[in-house]
Image (cartoon, rainbow, N blue to C red; front, side, top):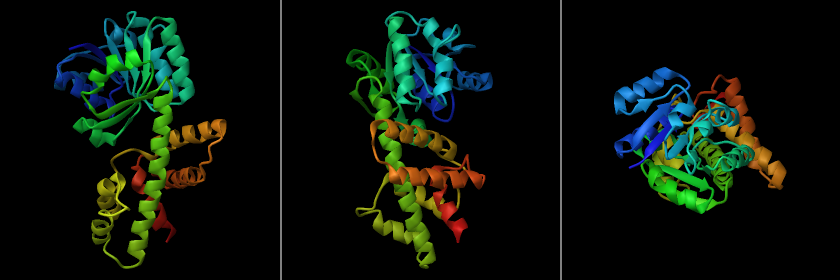
Amino acid sequence: MAKVAFLGLGVMGYPMAGHLAAAGHEVTVYNRTSAKAEAWVDQHGGAMATTPREAAKGAAFVMACVGNDDDLRGVCDGPDGAFAGMDDGAVFVDHTTVSAAVTQELSDIATSRGLSFVDAPISGGQAGAENGALSVMCGGDQTAYDQADPIIAAYARICRRLGDVGAGQLTKMCNQIAIAGLVQGLSEALHFAEKAGLDGRDVVEVISQGAAGSWQMSNRYETMIDDEFEHGFAVDWMRKDLGICLSTANENGASLPVTALVDQFYKDVQKMGGGRWDTSSLVKRLRALG
């Protein structure tokens, strides 16, 4: 068992850190809002820290799951950042979805301090985090990955190294690009079924068993039909991720016409007041159009 720090106790990080504790690791948590850290300790034991540096002190592995590029910089660097508290040879594992550029930036800082850095964004949503069944896509040095893999296993269904630092983030971009098109397609299918006078549940029961089947269809169709979106992965976060995808595509020359279009559809959902709705709320936009 290892001494582990976990930074960020949001809807994903809270249960992920809990799985680490349940696996027998010695876990210290940090969260910007201390009440969440206190609640986590009350539920899982372990310890809480008031700064990332304090949390990272003596930890062999420091895991982070925060909001965006600036949030990640904030918990990593600076006098109170995790890097300042980590011992030589310790491994920093970033589960945040951020740009490949900030990943490389922070990896370079970590390396200069004798630390290892693994970018390891996740997919599977809140349910995947709670059930310990996340997909984890990693980039980084092979040795560092091999060290971190058994720790990540506490909450992963699959964990795979895709290449050097940044490869994990690039793979997560592929994930979000695929999801954007899938959710829009599913939304249009359910909207069409409604307009055609079909029972959406009956339709999905049939088509989900064929080539149209997907995780989104299996896990989101009922709440989409029932017009329920107060759950899951927020539109605001999806737009953040798609912005990273589109910016990177401008750099590498990839053509993402569907992704760009769906990003604008999510912008429409935000204007409807749905920034915190689940990404499946694209169907609500179609209903609003008539």
